[in-house]
Length: 60
Image (tube, rainbow, N blue to C red; front, top):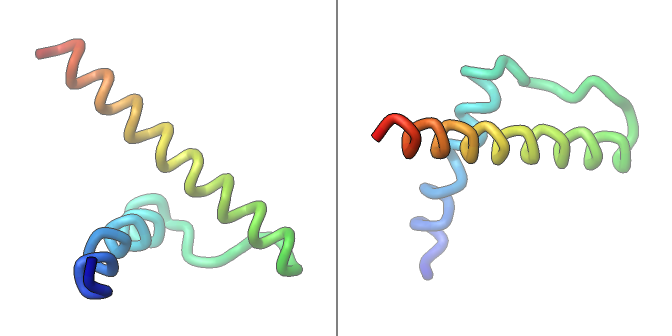
């Protein structure tokens, strides 16, 4: 796998987080706090994807 294809797959998550969810900076200070906050942001992103996928299956 090339670096280019990997960056193309990851970038939409950042765009969605910054633009659609309006999360453009960390609220907590410190490396471990920021890491925990980022993990919460990505977990909720994945939960939203699962929910929308389930909703699409239910209406299909």
